[in-house]
Image (cartoon, rainbow, N blue to C red):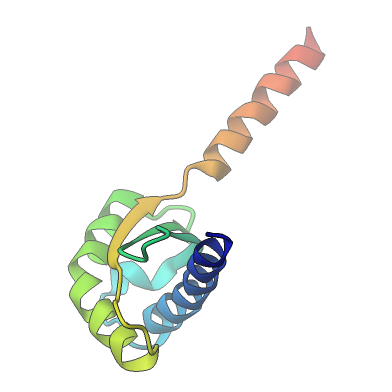
Amino acid sequence: MMEKGLRAKRVSELLREEISRLIIYEVKDPLVKSVIITAVKVTNDLSIAKIYFRSYDIDANLNSILSGLNRSKGFLRENIKRSLRLKRIPTLEFFIDETVDEGLKIDQIIKKLHES
């Protein structure tokens, strides 16, 4: 059982690196160019990859980027299939990484507590 979890972690890291590379060098959609892949979580059966992203462009519309990433799914899967030797390429699901926002909210709450 432990082996499956390790395999999922390895595949997650491989996918994060490969998707980041593809976005930088291969994807033509200018909306997607500012994407930073923050995390990839693959299910233990390797059927689904949940891909979390942010943008280094502070003014970027993350929902527009999400649409662009969803439009690029087929292209990304095809290229992953060519470059990574996996029996099955997981279904790609993109999510906006909210952890940065949550951290900022917690910081603001702590600051307010210290002020009062």
